[in-house]
Length: 145
Image (cartoon, rainbow, N blue to C red):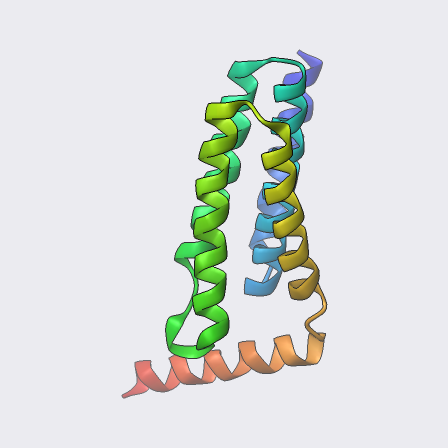
């Protein structure tokens, strides 16, 4: 009963955070969620809890797939191509981790996503705001025309 109430509270808190977040913050939350699921998957493998392992790896893979699918190839150039390849590699490695029940593979993917997240987190707020404003202006112009 208590656990259900805590989960419901966490779910509502997340909805509130997402509602007030910009694109950068949502991607930060997704990356943090993937890292959390990877930690839980690694622990599940180590404890030989295969049902939990499958659930956590599946959710981590879905988040990484979501991150990969929202890459903007029109703007990013080579960086986006590299990120796409890296996300694809991570998804493949999570399949390997699931088949082999190998916590080291999960740790490898976790390290990669943490590196990407640290780069994302290091983007200055001014650059984020400038990018968001220029995208809003472009979208407004497209709707006006």
